[in-house]
Amino acid sequence: MENKREIQLMEIVDWAASSEAIRAVLLTSSLVNPYAPVDPFSDLDIEFVVSDIQQFLSDDTWVENFGKKIAMIVENEEAFEGRHAMRMVFYENYTKVDFKIYSVEKFLEDVEADELQEDWDVGYVVLLDKDRLTKNMKPPTYEAVMIHKPTEQEFATLFNDFWWDMTYVAKCLWRGDLFYAKFMSEDNMRTQYFTTIIEWHIGLEHDWKVSTNKKGRLFKKYLPPVLWKKIEATFSGSDIEDNWRALFAYADIGSELGIEMAKKLGYPYPIELEQNIRTYLEHVRTMKKKEEL
Image (cartoon, rainbow, N blue to C red; front, side, top):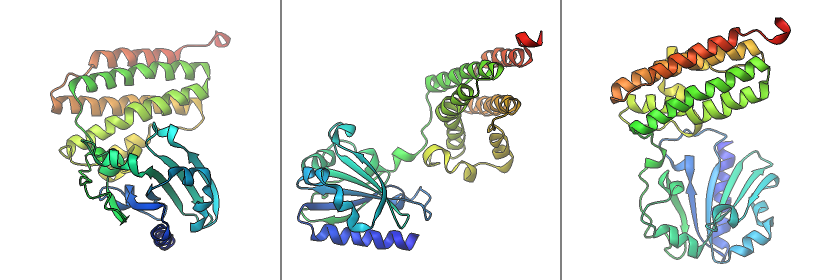
């Protein structure tokens, strides 16, 4: 699959070189980011800088110059505040290419900005530049992908919300509302809070000079096996009792990491809040329903 990707990349660059409308081509994201994992499923992230953007947006048949498409997502400039457009294409050979399409004018505005925009700061390589449009691009710092040390207020807010949302999971489990319980435990607690807690733990252990990639992709790499097993225990299936078990696993590992980090960071940890929420969780778990009375 990597070979298919390399061949496709060469086809894209050759086609762009022969097209008068395309003035520059960049490769971005994981394939040019030294902190990102690369495997056969890694996408090609291509940026086209074009002289007439409407030519590319009004007729998408150009995407099939690089293979037969199976599926495509179309996002025009309004989805990105007028900065650029996207065509994300899944091809018959099972490669995926994300095309970002810039007008020359908007591209140069981003080049001249005070700070390198995030998609470039995670890494870029100029593959083609017919007019030296990229000559003033700042080098990537990779700061956008690094884990950043939380402030005391950020730490306090996250752990307050982490314990708060457990109350929603508990009452949903008591009611048997599996969908809403999963929404709170996975979409809210895991995505918004728990992932960040683990990132902070890893960042602290590596002096804030580390990246775990998107949504915890590299967590297992940076965690000792014993801690990873505890984190695995926060995942659950459809059984209500299994979800209760996972909720208390959340509480245990959140407490363990939170107290440890608070001590190292010199921040207060909300131990009274934790104790009160734990008492509530135990209360709800043992509450009898009307039909059981």
